[in-house]
Length: 431
Ligand SMILES: [Zn+2]
Image (tube, rainbow, N blue to C red; front, side):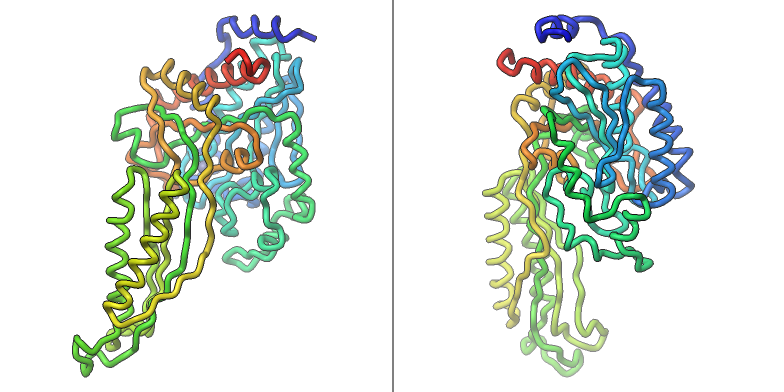
């Protein structure tokens, strides 16, 4: 077994085999195999998703690795190293229906390229153990439960709440996962994969317009924003649209509409905060009646827990004010919430170095969407993400795209980050 000091010297050798063009070729291969005219169709627990995973297995043939699926269906490819301490690289092969070719799959294919480089450079036995994980059902596209596999790994899954979920055809999540060989009652056993995990890295497309606007290919992700998601119901009074004078109305939609505009002011006070009223339903919802009841949903996000809490409070106060103005009442109920999750400071530093080395400038930005990396971080494993620019900021759409030169840079930067993280795992004090 190599001592850690010998191992550290190995890291000084030049990178031999990294081939980012191969990653782009593999992404296109996967697109052709699992997409159609409407985009990627790798929805988790479907035959097309299983086909994508078989394809991945064909790619690791001949590498000095071991492969297995854990109890929650996450796919693990392990390159054993001199140390059991483990560097994990991750992504997800599943997509939304009519999805893009890069969301999730870039993380898997780029990680595979880095794994190959580690295997090659260290003759099949790197100083640290390197694992690639393809998380099961990141998107939650079919059953409405995102981060399913990574939450089982992290121990934050909610089996009782999830097992009865159904897809649009009435098929239960419990049955869909069992069909693929993963009984839901065993999902918590996926926690065992945390053993020896020392760092987690994930490369992902940004899925937003920030890096493109700044003309930067790559970005360092600070963490994932916390989310407050609520249903707000305004109660007024249904009344005839012809006979009810304007000053006698209790118009529930008018109160909701005021709130829909106010949240722009509430979010606008903070640099990266976002607030969205994504759904409004009116009752009775006919052209000849004043709206007696209006159900709206509000989604608020920020990386700072205090800012998020303040925005939530302000929206509540504003809703009560507008309800009074419109002679209505307002009731709130929480749909879902998650705290902001900050990535690891040391890994953020390495990510910044890697991004700067490859692209010349490093910008730090929060992630609005949640990612598997957030679940990993919640489990206490140091984690960080890197973003590569998304053209037009579009994702979850067949037109999702990134310049090939940027994709190549992202593979290079992930590789550099992996080397820095591996050194740190062996000798945290030296960094
Ligand atoms: Zn994704």
